[in-house]
Amino acid sequence: MGPESSEQTQEALILGFLADGGEDFTSGEALSSKLGLSRTAVWKHVEALRGKGYRIEAVPARGYRLVEVPDRLTPLELTPLLATHDLGHTIHFHETVGSTNELAFRLAHDGAEHGEVVVTEQQTAGKGRRGRAWVSPPGLNLYFSAILRPELPPQRAAELTLVAAVALTEVLRETGAEAFIKWPNDVQIEGRKVAGILTELSAEPERVHFVVLGVGVNLNAQEEHFPEELRATATSLALARGQRVPRALFAASLWNRLEEWLDLHVEMGFDAVRQRWKELSSTLGQDVLVRTDRREFRGLAEDIDTMGALLVRTEDGSVERVLAGDVERLRPRATSGS
Ligand code: BTN
View 1 (cartoon, rainbow, N blue to C red):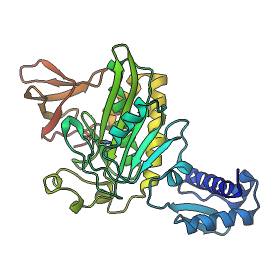
View 2: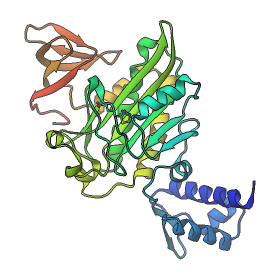
View 3: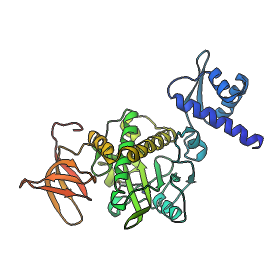
View 4: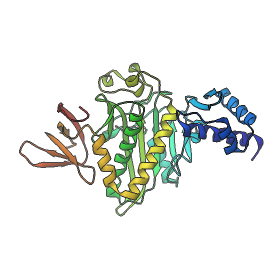
């Protein structure tokens, strides 16, 4: 390792420790003993990081605290903030791509490993569910696709979308936003969509080759960044909080949480995910209008089943099982999320 890369490693380690500390200060002494460096050397690294756009607060007798990271999503910003064992260990960063899902699918097809992530500043052909487009202006939001190689039969692959919705909603809530999941996997704040998930699969009848888990989160988009027809139904975290969102910190927290939930899904099975999904959802208990490719009907959204399908009690008392489609809430009921 040359002197330059060793400098970078030390800086990355310092950032990692500061990121772990969150809102708390990490003492200079703790940093110097963890890194085997003098206090002066630690201070020099902190100065170098500040020169690169990191805002690090230093308070005598308390230590250092990471306040802001440069608003970019390259491995340089993301890697030091990750606490994952696989997810994001290889990051394919692009200034601009058609769709991160498309690129991730090609990479996975060519042998990319579990946990590799494609992330971009901008998409020119971002894909949403059901053939829709995902508006992806540059430098404002988060667009990424994770390549997963789960040991699951194809019919269980859809569970991963719910895993992602749970992780996403938890991380949004930790920023103070009142986020809820709208079935199947839209994440909303105050009834407006802030994030979406598009899962694509390559499989044979008995075995999943890979899953591409694509996530788009509107972080710093302002109203003018949305096309007019979306302004009433879409929002961003910054619009909801009235405060700019540090994108790299958000992305890293999300990847860290996503991997925790992926691990939990492996260890405990889908039921743990399903229970949490139900706690975070605003759909259950609502009267809804269901639209699928083939039909439209009304009913009460009662539950999701062990495959994530929505169970809707219709007016004649029967229960309809909806595996894919959209729901629209008909009128508010007094339950959580309303
Ligand atoms: C939805 O319609 O709710 C799903 C939106 C998914 C958008 C993300 S952005 C990153 C990834 N690449 C895409 O082309 N789509 C997904």
